[in-house]
Length: 456
Image (tube, rainbow, N blue to C red; front, side):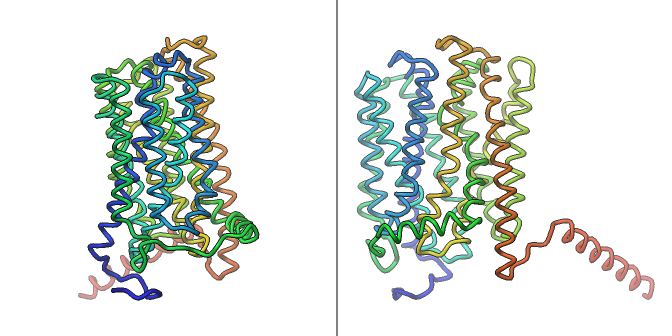
């Protein structure tokens, strides 16, 4: 048994993997709750008699609660540990889905999404906190990616079985089933989770307003934290907009696809993220000073994927839609790099706070995008659900505004972060210098080998 204060063992124990698996299951179900409204969007419009703008407001409210609670939840995480927050989050989300299953009034749906947003806010960063507590530092970048991407299996649960239940048994059965899943993982977390290898429940120092202000201010003032925020802002939002709200309507009402095909494409979105996550995690682990170039590459892929679909005359053919889905699937792994910035630029005592700050970014961009897309669709269709592909192309184009703002934020904070690193003795050399040096070494080795060959 490890004594408190000892380093995390280089080889994780079976117990560490078990704790991580339970936390991951809680996050998978949280993603199911988060994305359930996107799959049920068209059904919700008919059930509550609302237009696209009002429907988007449900998702916006959910994300607003999620984003607004990130910093408070980060502070609570530093104080009370992962176990209590994961259990509380599961209970809140289950309650929200139970209300959604039984209400046919807009007020009940609003309350349901508030509870789902609050519970969701408690889950992800609490599960992320378990990784450095139970695993050695060299494994953290890859496991952080795997946690974030494997959790997106919750989107598969909403895109396939939840969609099937909505089409079959109906609204109430589908949402009661998701509520039951929330209760199940809350109980599992209560029984199996441990905050650290030494203690089942770990309590941090009591939080005072002075300490809270200091930790939050210190995290925000470090340009590395803000680099993580802008990274999350720009890489995560377009995939979230697609999966959480407008992907299903875009594919079905806009592109004219059957529900089964739309579900398959959303499943592909998740699978691409799962495949790309470990690869990006390994690249981050091997090249920690080049993380921002990976981020910019992901953003470029997202911009190119949407550009191809939006510029295509009329309905895009299936190969073009697959290109878009693959590009969007890279966004989730790219956004996880933001949390790696929070981890490497902040001390453990304020890691929860810094992670919360980073996690705000993508969801602020997502909620603003979702609402703007809904308002544009309403303006073009007069509030009806009679969308065509041109309506969606105009509405979806608003995402480029957030990409431009985000890239500007990344470039600025990257420059500031590198300046801070240089003051601390870490110099990030420009890529052109590294490439020139490597090219020179390669040429030198080739000349040397040729010379030896001639001597022989």
